[in-house]
Image 1 (cartoon, rainbow over the protein chains, first blue to last red):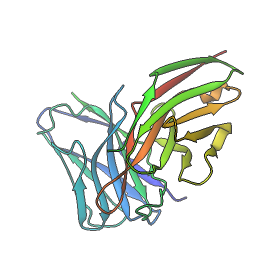
Image 2: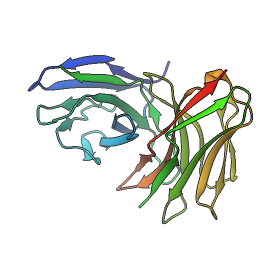
Image 3: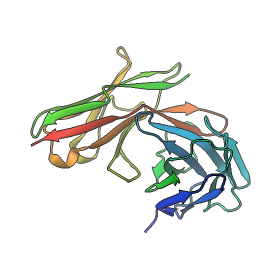
Length: 115
Length: 115
């Protein structure tokens, strides 16, 4: 089945460690996104990529890094510079369409907890 | 700048009663508007979207929303609530950025169904 797969579902990070969240899609979508979700704050955009080998900062990119070496993959690294990384992370993708209002599809999310 | 405001972080309705979740938008251009639903520990699923066609938009699971330009609103309704409707609901608007669309989300409304 086509979809977006995020892994792991649950991840624990020690202080000072970098961790990487995986996101893979087989929908043949060009654009991919990472959102962070905190209670009462909705979803906030971390990074997005419109095409392979290109990505842009979102609203809260500090302390995060991404790569887009393949169309299907958009991993997110949460670095030690991110001071409050405990959150629910959602990966998403969408087909191209600058003004068409194309639907953005979401993965099942990953929980990251600092211990 | 495009943004959305969801009125009421928590809404409770009795099973069988009308569901009304409020969303107001601000946009300097005709917006594309979305409603997403999120069940616990899962990603977001599209309920419906408005892309400047019919102002009354029908979605999945019996939900619908009406775009009212004069009120800058896009409220979500369902005539008769079901226990399975208990979830968090997010209104979102397309934020036009460089090259592709980005969704800007409201802070969400948690819907509780009372048996």
